[in-house]
Image (cartoon, rainbow, N blue to C red; front, side):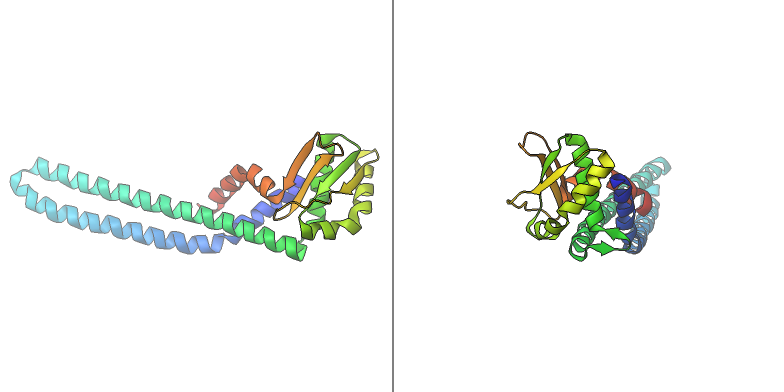
Length: 211
């Protein structure tokens, strides 16, 4: 369920970049077309001058100039793609930051996402007593919800799970660190770690939609 929610968020994030991407890519295409046209004019002009020294030499020089132009155009497109990817991930961070503050956006509920993170970690760790570490804002947000979250997770797992919140806060954008009570086993489900683990998936989705 957590992965399905993340997939929806990923789709939301990359779609947010789509409109800007279209404009930037159109500008990039226009620039690369100008590079090619200028190169062709230069190639034709220089070829006419060189033709006096032999047709074969003129053809070789023209091909060299055009190949150089194609390389420059390709490098420019790659640079624009890298810029767009950075823009997409920047918007991803901005969107998640706003979601954490507002608590809900376009059907995505932050409390539900965090509950799923805790449930997923509980299944991995396998202990009945778990300690949760949040940032300062989320520590205050989830303290009153702790009993209900414990009940929900206990019901879904078919066994009693007891949750407590660590007094120490975690310097993170959002999400939660979950550890066994003795600290021997843990799962880092902060938003930064989740983003890092799904980084390649985000790149694949952004590339598919933007390019």
